[in-house]
Image (cartoon, rainbow, N blue to C red; front, side, top):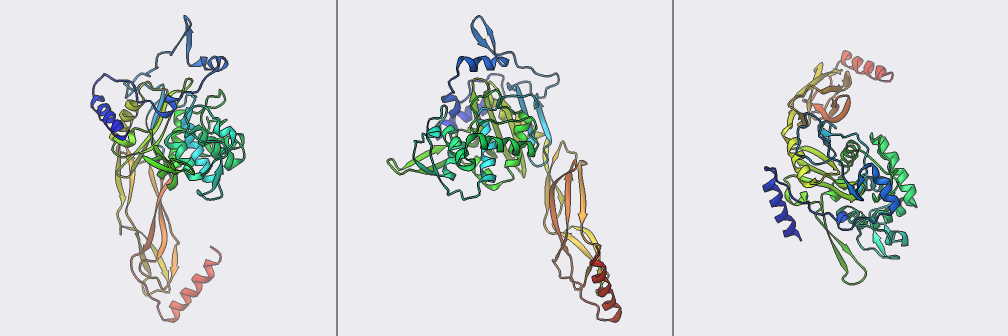
Length: 421
């Protein structure tokens, strides 16, 4: 299977520079598309039009001046995960169905809500075992570690795993979905609503490309989230033969795209082919979202390439750089310099660093003695008003006490005034 993915990936890369594109690799969701009732087909009428008894997709709208007209997605966006800066977008705020990219929010909610350990034993309910669509083949009454279910949910898009996780963490899928929606809105995804944890179609279950990008960027702040979504293979222990189950990530970019580190595919008839991908290069983490794209892998690669061409990692602070000075009360020296404890590199979109603002947070004065290397403050960096990074500031040199009456008086006065500041 791995060799097949790598070979197919090489072919994808070879044809990206020409106009000819080919049928996409089918993700796990696409291998088992959910069965839709006649009522469901009626609900998806906003996406497809009935002509002569056959459903046809309306043409993709490509806005004037679109930087990537070859992209087939109806809605798409590429953002820098740290700053949230939009590098490319097409109809990014248009409401759409997320399919199994829903599970990105499910993973975040599970990691933040579960008060136990990832080693928690989760009993599989009949509801979870009977879930339609993509599956990791769970059976009623079995027990799995929560961590293994999270990997099954993200690597092979197990709807059964997503349901079992929701029931374990919140007691029911409905309660879990409510938490998902609340957390998404808190993150800033205001045009998002979830009704389940797996992404099976529901007309009241929706998001936007931009909201999905914001949700995913938030997830990348969590090291466990990053680890799970970037894992290529995972082995799940079983209590009966064959005693292990091998899971292989269906995100093809992890196998072929330099720097790829996530995140999730999805498909339903209503949503079309969807994928959220991510890649990190030189400290720059990009998130790309494709919703309803005929050639979602080609779209993702073109969008990530475009993003990396329009952003750079720039050193804004050098290690040991002098950033400020503070007064020293009762010291042999009246001031001490504060220097950066480490270097700081930040993403700079389109070569313009003017959107960054630096604020030095340090006391006006400190009491002697001051030890060299003592942390005294920090330099905080904001991007368009949002805090994105900080660097600890430490004393550049040692400042001893001045052993005199005036030195003692200065230290005494410093202690008195510090009580009121």
